[in-house]
Length: 489
Image (cartoon, rainbow, N blue to C red):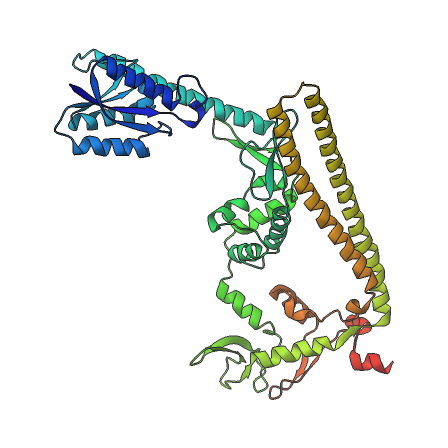
């Protein structure tokens, strides 16, 4: 009696097509074996694509055939497209099976391997599925290209967006909070060109953006965030199309970030560490030889110690934390004069408060309008469902989309309301935070610290005690006063 192993396979896009389900294939193969008096040694069921032979169940079948290579046997399947959809891999696999005394056979497309002319029919049977795959891939690529040319983003939504479906069945993407706000923030941080890309990624991760290094590198290069969609032609050329989705950042900001991240940075992490610690470098002079002091770390037995030191023969060396702390204390003694406070209040009231509040109010109106549109859409769908115009599956899908969209919009609305509350709190606090304008020096970026030291450099320094005085130019002396002078007035 002849023996055979049955192989049934179906891919995801074939599961709903009649005649391609696993039970139907298995039933036909079993009937064929029963009619032809063939003993079934095993059945291998596969839910995998046939573009190659990297399939779990097929690997098990090959291992079984290899272990029983001394006996003749067959592998039965319905058609040759169940075996493979790649003619090159198919011929290679047939040769391998021949070494194991195993013959693949399609019951609907029989081939007699003992007849030389049969190889022509085998080539036809194997080439047709590959041609179908190529045509399907080409049609898919053309469809995606047409969607992009219309300004739609047909792929999976990038981080910060969510895939949605409109009433007419079109796929769109919409901003998703809080990821959208974090991405907007990280682009602004990269545009400052202060931190390394990896440092910005870690800061974004602390804010809640979960993203690997490789994906983050792709994320900051994705033009979809500025509202552009790249379209690649068959010739290999690429051009940008304005997308119909809402952008998170401006095109100017996006291309500025691209310029920064593609330019080789001259600063290393070690230099950034030096700049952060020795922000007074260039403003301190040696008390013995009048040379400019530089900064470096001295390696101790347990840790490194930062020092400002002279490169001359005098070997002057002063602890950096002592002078840094003294400079910050002197800055904290400075405060705005009453006239300057009044001017700052007018400026902040006009721009930082009123303008921001107007923008947030406008954003809130847009979100409320979108929520109302969602409610109207669901109401219309409910009427159509009651009138038996809309099917249950379609109505359920609309309700699911409504819940997702409404949840995102309500979250965005809550964020805007929170920002408006913060603006009202700032108004109630008065001018007290504005008076002590230099209190936040320690939390500033290194670049901002260096800029401030350049505006207000040390005038006199006692290198033994660390005491120092600051040099206020004519303009700054009119708006900045020390606290003791302020109290005497």
